[in-house]
Image (tube, rainbow over all chains, first blue to last red; front, side, top):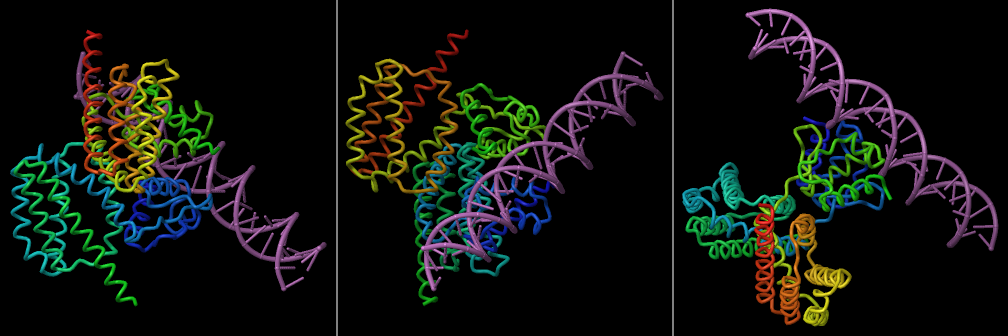
Length: 218
Length: 218
DNA sequence: TAAACGACTAGTGTATACAGAGGGGGAGGA
DNA sequence: TCCTCCCCCTCTGTATACACTAGTCGTTTA
C-alpha cells in the first residue's frame, strides 16, 4: 500500500475515534515522524482530510482537527435529511423489491440482536450497513452517493458522542424496517417520510443523551 | 499566491471551460512544465481536483478529466433538487424577509435584462448569483453549504452544454422571483416547491437543447 | 508467423534539501 | 516594570533527485 494511503487511513481512524480530538494541531514533521512516512505523502493525506472537512488550515501553521460537537448535530441532520430522503425515494423507484422486503424481514426480527451482547449488536450494525449499501446501489446516482459518503464521515465521528441503549436500538430497528418496507413497496413518498421520521427520532435521542451527559457531569 | 493554488485555479478553469475536455490525461511532468510549477504543488492541485470529482485516477498512470455529458444531467439534478429544496426551505425559515422581497422585485423586473445584450445578461447572471448567495447565508448550515459548493462545480461545467435563449431566461427569471417570494413569505414548503419547479424546467430546457444539437449534427 | 519473454523507457511515488515566512522570545528603552 | 523592536528558530511551501513499477517494443523460439 502507498505511504500516503497508510498515513491517510491512520489519521482518519484516529480522528473518527477521537484519539485526535478537535483542536489538535497536526504539524507535518511531527506527524510524518510518528507515522513513519516522509512529509510528501503526509501532506497528501492531510490534503484529503481537509477536503472532507475533517481538518482545516490553521493560519499557515499546520492544520487542526475541526471542531465537532452535538451543537453541530442540527446542521448535520438537516443535510442528512435532504440526502437520505432523496436516496430513499430514488431507491423506492428503482430498487429491486425483493432485496428490500428481505431486509425488512430481517429488521422486523432484529429484536433479539439489539438486546443481545456486543457481538449481536455488531450483527445489527452490519445489517444497518447492508440497508445503506442496498439503497446506495438502488438509487443509482454517483453524485448523490459521493455527497452521502462525505456526510457519513462526519456522522461516524459524531456517533462517538451518543450512547445507544436497547430501547432506542429496538425503535431504530422498527424504523429501518419501515423504510425498507416502503422501498420494497415502491412508494417513494412513504420511503422519504419514513426516513424523515427515523432521522428525527435519531436526532432527538442524540440530544437526550447530551442532557444526560450534562446532568452526569454536573 | 502559492504555486499549488495557481496550478489548481488554472486547471479548474480549463476543465470548467472545456479547454481540457473529458478524457484528457493530465501527466504530472507535462502539466507541471506547462504551468510553470514543480511536481509537488501540481500533485496537490490534482489531488484537490480529484476530491471534487473533476479528475479520476487513471490506473496509476496519471489522472484523467472525468466524463460529463447531458447523460449525467438527470443524476446531477436529482442531487441538486435534494440540496436546493432543503436550502430554500431553511432560508424561508431563517432568512431576512426584506432581503428576499427585494430580490423578488429585481427578478420580477428582469425582463429587460434577459432580452438585452451580453452585458445585460451578465447583470442577470450576477442577480442569480446574488440570490444563491443570499440563500447560502440565510440557511446558516456549513455542511449543506459545502455539499452545494461541490455540486455547483459540476453544474458550471455542464452549463457549457446548454444554450440559453431569451424565452427560457425570461421564464427562469419568473421562477426565481417565485422562489425569492416564497422565502420572503417564510413559506418553507412553497419555497421547496418553487425550487422543484424551477429545476425541472431547467432540466427540461437542457434536454431540449440536446435534441436540437442532435438534429443539427445529423 | 505468432506468441512469449526480456529489456528499456517513461512516469509515478517518496524522500530530502533548501528557502521564505511567521511567530516567539529576549533585550533594550521608556 | 512594561512595551516594543529585532533576531532567531521552527515550520511550511517548493524543488529536485532517486527508486520502483508498469507498459511497450523488439527479439527469439516454437
